[in-house]
Amino acid sequence: MADRKIKKSKGKDDAKQHWFAREVLGLIRQFGNTVIWAGVCIFFIEQAGMTLRAFAGRTSNANLLLNIASKVSITIDISIAISVAMTGAYLYEYRRHRKTRERLTARISQLETYIDKNRSTSGISTEGTTVIGDL
Image (cartoon, rainbow, N blue to C red):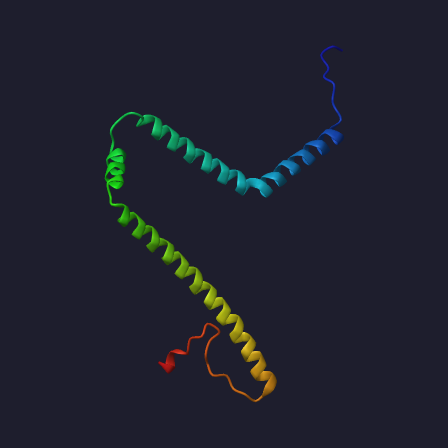
């Protein structure tokens, strides 16, 4: 009689295991992308730290580049910074102007058809460009 194993009821244990598995898989599906990105960022930070520890106190190409960059005239640094800032401002304004033009073009088209239902389109796109044949 001592050799017999006690059989457990599988009903409640299976249900708990299935519930747990569903919950874990649901969390992985919901937060998996974030966890992967966090892991990649942690990996790169660790690699950068290892690199800095390896080069600590040694002369390297990075030190040489930093020395050369520090000797560049302040006027060149300021002109590069202003150029980058102005390029960014130009791209921002260009994007904003294009979106405004698209919004207003749609509104003007709507008003023109409201005033005269027989009016034909000029062929100008919502971006303000003409059709290829007009050029």
